[in-house]
Amino acid sequence: GKPPKREGVKLINLEKPQSSKDVDLEEVVKTLAKVVKEISYKLAREEKGIGQGSQ
Image (cartoon, rainbow, N blue to C red; front, side, top):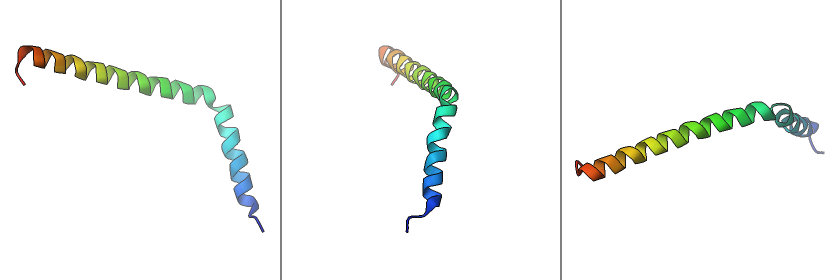
């Protein structure tokens, strides 16, 4: 027969995101913001380096 434990885990997994959607979204936004800042900083450094011809 099918193990009922998996069904219970599925229900828990489905319930968790719904109750913590706001927290997850905030974490995702913060992570994306950090990544964007890092990328923009690196691009700015690369552009300055290419402009100076130091690389």
